[in-house]
Image 1 (spheres, rainbow, N blue to C red):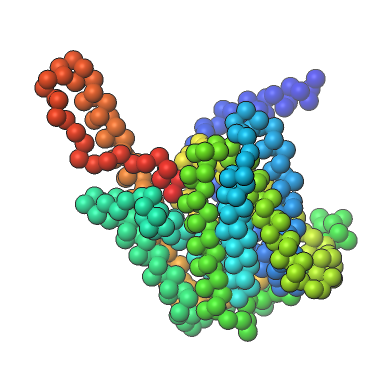
Image 2: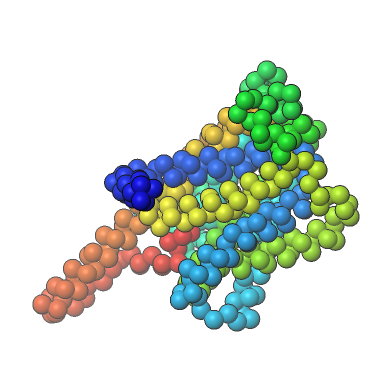
Length: 402
């Protein structure tokens, strides 16, 4: 009874916390979770984990986490499946899982976690550009929101170009004493003695992407952002026909797993690549599957539902800042002038796009209010406003998540 009373009181305490504060705490925790994923993924590559086997195991874990929630929570919302839906799920998986995660790992292997996170800030601008090209969204240069989104897209393109073509001199290089040493002799403390046998970080070779092709890595990361943006654009119309987000994600994850599994079976000839050789390798894959694809996904859905997509996107640069600190401490990452300049331009472009998107929504609400009041007035005095019309078209609801 005491346990029940204490749990009920703690629940009341949590409910008494303002929702806005809960959202900010959740978004900060989300950015730390995703930041850890960047560093953990790079650590996995440094330990020699296969770039083909890693996403296979990651998506297996993610699918096992998503399936129960999709099945039980969306029983009533899930339409009957047909061949057309299956083809669309397969295509979404090809760009949103296989190309997205594949390009990310190839890019991360040649660059660094910080700049991988920095380039991801260009996704909203690339998504807007794709939506314009596909005529899902219109460019309205006669309004400030349209100018802001175009300017933000230009900033992001310039920033990504700078990161790709200009590495520049080293601005910051951590001393060896600042780097975390994951050998068994130094990581053991009184708190961690019980978990050391399970996670052996001794095989982890730390350091930045030295001897790799920086330009090629940035091109891979741009391909990763293009795939991510394409997944967002093509997912929006599908969700109108199949309004069950968890089920769509589960089907996409399933087909992505099949695609990665086929590619890995054909291209990965080393049987040892499928075996965990240390606790550190197992930990990186578990973190990617459970935290980045499971917990983070659930938190993000809740935050989007309560705070909106713009609120969630505004926190993206926080992730880049956290990644920079983590990667510097754990991996001894060096920072270059070109990467810093490009990251600043991309973050500026992100906020331009988000501000334009927010102003666009305000304009749509104002137009809707004008239309409603005009309709009510017309009912009372139909002759006086017979020719009333809107000079700007309403925004299509399909652009809400673009």
